[in-house]
Structure formats: structure tokens, C-alpha cells
Length: 232
Image 1 (cartoon, rainbow, N blue to C red):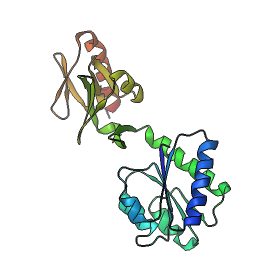
Image 2: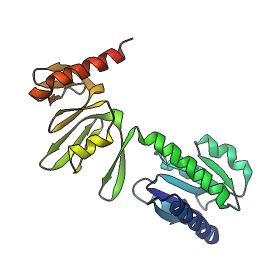
Image 3: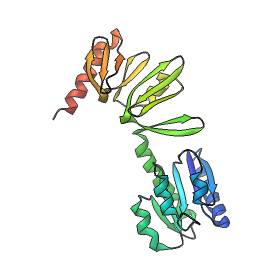
Image 4: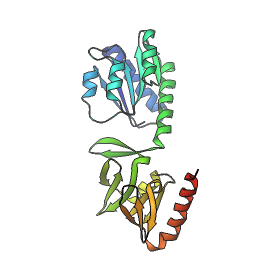
């Protein structure tokens, strides 16, 4: 859990929630950035996306449930409210938990544990990229291939490219078994390989990715494994 946003219009409750969140982070040994907001409009102006949203339902202007719908994304949402009747609406938008005021640590800590568990399950399918001070999330299944060029990493996806400073060695350690190091400068997602051509892999996008001579035999074996696994 890299980031947590708390949105609560009651200044006293906002301070208490922040204190409990800080206590939780320390107790779990986490390095989580915690931000506080007094309204949904203020939160919506914040660039990027938070891992966890701790939202009061009864906010001035846009309420917490509508706020979560507008923000969309992949944030894990925990609602805080004085009224139990909002529970159905809360879970309709996939909330992690629904806490009734006054909130205590014995309620909040298990809810945050559950949010982190959900994040962990999802993170196995997501690559987080820190770009211009904000985190961007890329689905592994959307990645076509990755390359390094002039000390810059370029991640090619179905929806465009992401560029940032880094190495293929570090990136490879964050990816799963569907990715193959076919060249010292390329990692390819085998799920998007259509066929092997002379010295190259043809992708579903129509692009060709270079396969080094010494890795062609291993690449062919990997491709056959993926084709066998997808046969019905």
C-alpha cells in the first residue's frame, strides 16, 4: 500500500482517522503516503490514483458513494459513516468495508488489512510505474513487449507506450512467466506472439521483436509451451 487518501468534512474526525491510519502504517512497517481532504471536490482535483480511499459517505457536495463512482480506477474503498442505511449503496460499488462512526482501531485495522490483501491479489496482474511523481498502473496482459534504448525503458502496450529510466534486469524481476527475455534489449509477452520468424517474433499488433541467435531455440520451446497450454 503506497498511498492512502482520507476524505472527511468533520475536522475532528479527519484528524482521528489520520492518527489511526498513521498508527496502522507504523504497526505494519509500511511506507505509505497519507493525504487528507475535506471534500470530494478537493480529492478529485488531486492528480494520480490512491491505493486506498477512506471516504466519509455524507460529504458536502458530492457524497462518498458518488465520489467513488466518479474516481473509478482501482482504488480500494473503505466507507465511514454514522448511518447504517448507506451500507447497501457502499457495497454496490465494491467497497472493501463499511465502518460506522465512531471508528476505532479495532474496526479500521482489519479493514485496511483487507484492502491490502485485495491490492496484493491485484498487484500480481499489474505493473506500477512511477512517472512524473505519480503512479500509473499497467495490466500485464496489455503489455506487448518491453525494450531498453539509450538507457531508457520503453513499455509497449495495446494502449500506447510508457517511457522511464530503468533496466530490463530490474523490470524482468517484476514480471511473471509469460514474459521471455528474447534479446538483451527486449522482453516479449508470449501471450501476444503469433509466430516465430527468422530472428524475430511476430506479435498480435503486427510488430516484430528481435530474437537473438543464441536464444532462438529456447524461444521456440517457450512458444510451443504457450501454444500447447492454449489449445482446447
